[in-house]
Length: 358
Image 1 (tube, one colour):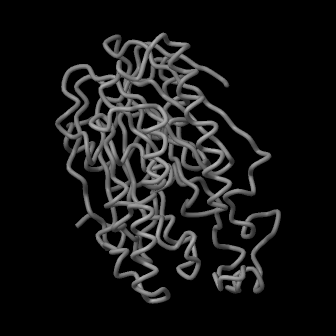
Image 2: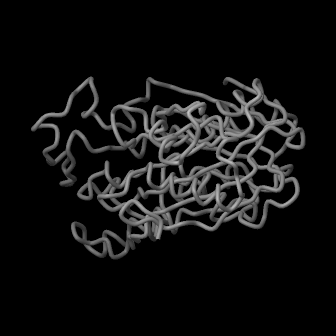
């Protein structure tokens, strides 16, 4: 386990954007029966999700969130000197989406901009990267933008993933200030499990072709997907989670000499209700301290932790609040963050349609 600690850096404001289109899972029956849909919803706890339309990308969701954040907090764009964009559904193979967002947001050319390609743990990874750059520099303000349109990469004909994933984007403003005190991150990876969650084709190991985009039956249950659509080995992922996540949280707490009772809120990756309920019971966590957006947004990959903060903790982060963040996913990678929040300003969630806020 790799531990990193920072001092005097924190999130001062957050905003989020989601697609306007709402998918009600119990009515998501174009391919599967109502009984099948109800069974899956009862198991996962995911009642509805947001799907981006064909004209909306991850960058559009992040743009809307960032513009809301900048406007609500009267931020001078000249003070933003770092922009990091997190996504595994970027606009292009190249250029980096962060650079196009720098231009679309009207940020100065002195702005550092780069992408982070990582899965569900990426917001915590991204915080660590930005915190490190801020602590060791004279940078005034940084934007961490995190967006995913996972609805575009999973087959609606594969019941193991068709009811799980949704879309969203989040913007976080990060600044240096002694008031934040110390933050601690545990960042981990195990590439031997890379095949547990994967899109096999469409990259440069197996390039796109007429064959890779054809959906085909992939198992004895009749599930269908193409090689350019994602799959997930749910049972293996669950076994990984119940082994690694509690252990990582406990070791990070031991390092910092804290207990779960020291935190105002514990924010988990919103994979599904069954996994999070299991971890809560295993670690004897107080359910009142654990916000959830699984029911209304589903699994939004790396966006799920910050989207849950924006959605559920607006108006609850006045003064100093200590948050424990935990996420895991594709890679496999997993991360734990002990992150103080001090008077964090959270904006209302914006809806996006045809690439623009509505």
